[in-house]
Amino acid sequence: MLTDQIYGIYSKKLVLVVGLLALLNAVILMGIVTPALTLITGSPTPDVLWGYDVQTLQAQFEKLAQGDATIVYLRFIADSFFPFLYTFLISLLMVPLQRGIFKEESKWHSLVLLPFVAAVLDYTENVIVLQQFLTYPSLNAPIIAVSSLATQLKWIVIGVALIVLICEGIVYRFLRSRE
Image (tube, rainbow, N blue to C red):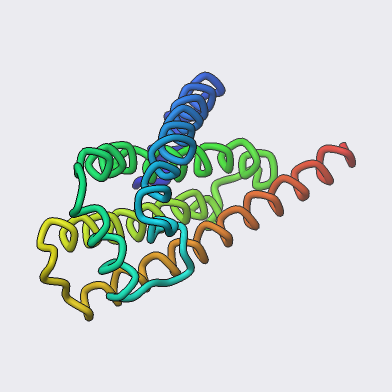
């Protein structure tokens, strides 16, 4: 089971490595590439928006099609690693908290899989947006609606996963203070 594998590979060193890689990727993606795209298009990239439609992508792709698409490909390359890194990090951070809260194996251990749902949604969004960029100017409204929904669900799942992580941290600290 995947949960057992995540528990099995957990180590503080792995958390540090994954955390540093996620931070480096975030700096490249959010600090360099995404702001460059925003400057070119005049609007934020779709994956940071709550939702978007054909007109949003049409306007962005139109501006990007006028210049060099290298920045778009750099963004998708960087964003191909980021969903795995941030979700794996959240999952790994849950492991020691759950071990401290649940002394025995529990059905709650499967909560470490929750962040990976966000990764699947993030990859769904990324693949669809890239596919639509590659087929521009022919855009498919229903496919873009699926991508927008995936983006919205991704943010909801990330929020829930972070709330779970924070709650586990609070419970863990409370239980430790009672020992």
